[in-house]
Length: 118
Image 1 (cartoon, helix red, strand yellow):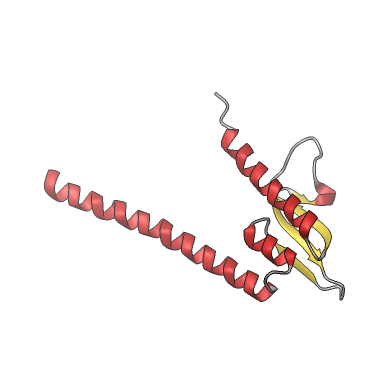
Image 2 (cartoon, rainbow, N blue to C red):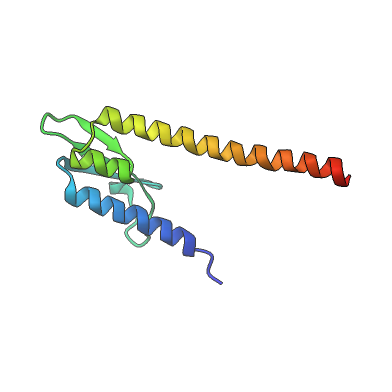
């Protein structure tokens, strides 16, 4: 059984989001960073995970965004870069909160099971 199916799905989703950013952006696409380096370092025979998309406005200011819905919203001009960073930070906090909540739930469950079955 091939275990790369889930990573292929993730790579495909990220690539599709990158393509949406590239085609709908009001900014110029300057560079793409991959999990193995920048676009100039990319091995063309293997699809690497895109981690950052570098965009540049008319004034020459560069913005680094992740290929996700928030990055797409910024690239389209729907939100400011400050709002993009705020949304990214809140998403990260939310994911950490969920992760530690799950850990606490299982820890509490183990304690209860040890008390009643131990």
